[in-house]
Image (cartoon, rainbow, N blue to C red; front, top):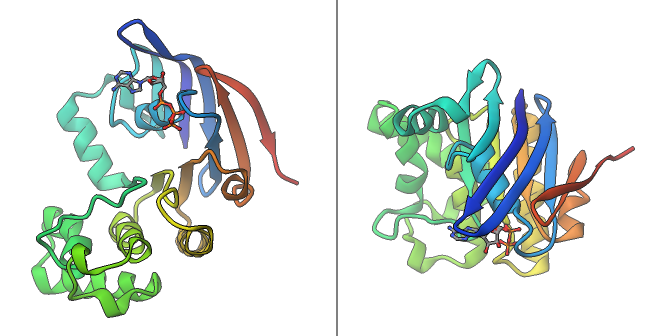
Length: 222
Ligand SMILES: Nc1ncnc2c1ncn2[C@@H]1O[C@H](COP(=O)(O)OP(=O)(O)OP(=O)(O)O)[C@@H](O)[C@H]1O
């Protein structure tokens, strides 16, 4: 479903990726692991079409993501991908249900329909009580659950998550991860997850280890 060929990315003099190739099958959960600065986030952002590699190709099904304009990549992300970052990046001035409804409103859905779907996702993530609260009134764990609901509300084909539990304590982090993965599996969503935490990576079907911008090992769990 997703394929990356020989990705190279430089930031000035710094080589962030030095020829990385891998593929992800539909419905698979893959963890990209590695030490700080190894290139995990750069890899995720190239594969998700958030940035383009300097060299190499990224294919999403039959679409050459690396060759699309910024506008087409934004459209592809909006229609097919969901993204969660370490800090949920919710809009402060909107309530939880409005934050989650936003991607549906942008896709042209009617307001009441979008809010109903948002509330269903908040309930699935066990934060129905927060529907009318703004991010400032929520805990870090609640905000991250809302961010996951917002990423999944459009039923994306692929969910990209960059340290989605990195800002949470280990108990809350494990809970959010479990809910995220079970929601993704229930809906057949492919997941690409960046983490430096082996306990988080252990939940994935497969681990891709990156070191100094190159693949270290690709292992499949039994
Ligand atoms: N926007 C940027 N400008 C300049 N250098 C960058 C930029 N983004 C990443 N880098 C550099 O590219 C390399 C890879 O960074 P990247 O963020 O992909 O690593 P990472 O494994 O995700 O690290 P961390 O776990 O600390 O987030 C690092 O040397 C980093 O300093």
